[in-house]
Every structure is written in C-alpha cells, then in structure tokens.
Image 1: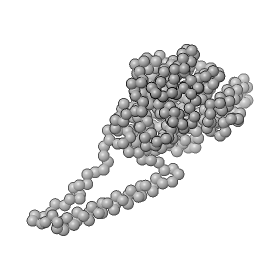
Image 2: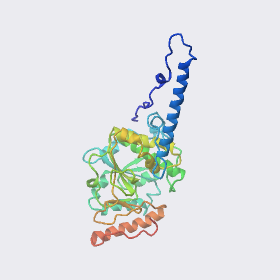
Image 3: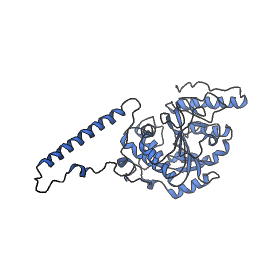
Amino acid sequence: MCMTKATSSVPDSGNNLVAAGKSGESPHGRFSGRTVVRSAAVLVVATFLFIVLTRSFDGPNRYFMLSISSVSSRNQKSNFSQEDIDTLELKKILDNAAMEDKKTVIITTVNSAWMAPNSIFDLFLESFRIGNGTHQLLKHLLVVALDKDASSRCMDENLHCYELTTPGVDFSGEKFFMTGDYLRMMWRRIEFLRIVLELGYNFVFTDADVMWFRNPFPRFFPHYDFQIACDFYRYDPHNRRNSPNGGFVYVRSNDKTVQFYNFWYNAQEQFPGKHDQDVLNKIKFDPFIDRIGLEMRFLETAYFGGFCEPSKDLDKVVTMHANCCIGLENKVHDIKMVIGDWKKYSKNSSITSWTMPRKCKY
C-alpha cells in the first residue's frame, strides 16, 4: 500500500514563548510576565483564526478538511484482508484481459442477483454487442464476481472472471441502497480497485447497469489520472462542484492514483454510514488531492449520461447509466427501454432521444 508520510505544518513556537531573562533576574520577574502576555496573545490569535476558518467553510458548499495524518498517512488496516485477494492469480487474469497496451482493462463487479437470467448483466452484455465499436471491448472485460454463483455464471459466459468472495459476508442477494451489506460491497470494490492500480493496470470501472453504446476511449481526456462520469454535470470538466458518480470511472495507474484510492478508502471512517460516492463528494475538495498532484476530470453527461441527466442527442451518446433509480426490478424494466431505443436508433437515425423512464424517475 502506497502511503504518504505526514509532516506537521505547525511550527515549533516554543522559542517565541520563552524569553531568556537577564542575569540575576528572578524567573518570576517581568520577563515571566511577558511570557504570559505573549502566550495569551498567541491563544487569542489562534482562536480567532479557528473561528474565521470554521465560518469560511459554513454554507451549502462547505467541505471537510480531512486530517491527512489521521486518514491517509498511517498504517490503517482494511476492513477486508488483502490476503483474501490472490494477487498472483489476479495479475494473471489482468494480463489476459489487458488491451494492446498490456496495461488497460475494463472492470465490473456483480453478484448473483445482478447476474440472474434476464437481469442486469444480460442487458449489460447486450449493449456491448449492439453498440458501435463496443463488441470487441468484451474481450478486455474483467468480471469480478462477489459470490460463487456469480462466478459460475461468469465462467458460463466465457469471460475473464475473478471471484472476490469475503469470508463471513454474503454478497449474493440484492443489496438495497444504503443498507449495511450495500455499504460493505461498495467499499470492498474501492479496496479491490486500489489493488488493481498497485499491480500497475489502468482501468475503466463500470457498473453493470451502465449500457455501452460507443467506445468511450476517444472521449477520455489524454494524460489525466482520474476521470469520472456525473449524475449532474453543471460546470466545466475541471470543476469539482460537478456531481460525480462512481459507477463509471477511468483511472490511470501511478503513484498518485494509488495514494488517492488509499485516501478515499480510509476516509470512510471520517464519514461513517456513507457510501463511496458520498465520501468522494467530501474529499474531492481536500488539499491532499492537490498536494499529490492528482489530475481529476469530470465527464459530460452529453456523452456519458444517465437517468439522472440523460444525454439529449443519441448521435453523441457513449454510455447510458441507470442511476437515480433504486431497485433491481425498476432498473431492469427501464434499461430494456433504453436497449429498445438504441435498436430503433440504429435502424433509423432520425430517432434522437430516449423514451422517458417508467419505473425510474429523475
């Protein structure tokens, strides 16, 4: 695990608080009084600065300035043992799935509920097969199965598969939004992706409810470390006030991204009960991001849209995400409509917009 060493930004002010008395003067004389006055002045100034800084972060756009020494720089043990992950086996599978550059893969995580027949995963694979220039990308897809049944189904599809089970945790059934098992599953995913970065692989991570209709790589910014789709895109691609969605990200493997994923994972203890996306919305403003030099970009919903903010022009669509939608049955219903719209568009390009979702409201 790549760590950064914390250094104190608070100067040692001891020399400023202790005055050397003149020869023969009592330590309880006037120089001692000056020391008390100086100490009091320092305390007043520090209190004033604390109040100003605290109030400056107040308001709807305030953010948390996390303690780097407490979150990113110490040896914190993961909730999940890295021993559960066979890195030698994982590296072998990543090598087999990698693109021509030998270091870029596409990754999704699924459990048996999402891989049931006629469920999300079938629609996910269908989108690759009917998309423009996406069918060949399937050979670079790594399916991370969170339970044994999902792993068996993956093998049946003749895909690159890695079984990521967690001792004592059952990830097989539908995990409802923000329940304990759902949160554990989301954070397990972040930990796994960090390990992929440590092994030296770039990745596009995609939720299985993201439909792929065009090759996304031409739309990624060149040479940036971390690129992420948005629920709502309101600003320019550099602006961190955009609303990111962790269901579709492109990440390049380097020291900065390893440190960032480690920081992201460990930040969960600062925000108990929050999932990875909520925590990302907190830490994206943290000075640590700039300190390590991470280049972060936000992808436009015109190309990488979803039910929250759908792409308005099918001529531009790259992916379509069933976000802003809770419940597996609801997602399946409305994704089928999305697949139907794309098929119609492929036959008649005069159809340029999506059908309004019936079960998923945005």
